[in-house]
Image (cartoon, rainbow, N blue to C red; front, side, top):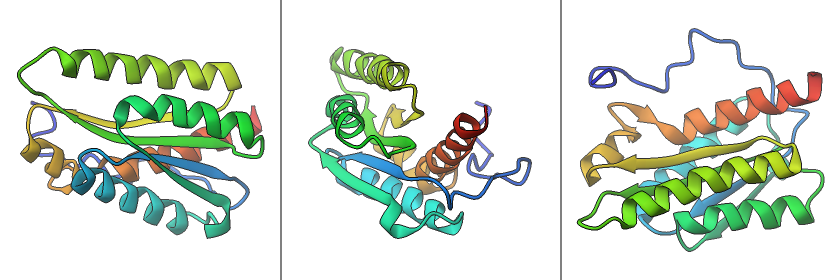
Length: 163
């Protein structure tokens, strides 16, 4: 596995623009709260560290990862001033096909909301085989997917503003 020894949240190889001119939404799933809370904290910390003002961040919880798409849709339909939305969730493989259906629906839904509104909607959802893998990617040895999602949101908001 290519990520086995790598911290995925290392951004030393790229330039991150200032987020000071942008407004962000963070939609976070309450299911698997230990993990999604860590993702949220990483995303929030990263946005603030990259110049985003606290008052320019709208944070909203939804029950689970499946509801991330609806949350992003509702936020963008009501708040035209949002430049990008970060969707944070965690789906851990179980014994049924539920995992496959949820992951596919959320990935497609996030993509479709972004296309509908012509705004960056970022997929910050962990799709892991077990809790340990989720912990490793929510502030553990592989970094924090919340940090990655925040950097992606800043870069895409800047891309969108300057295209």
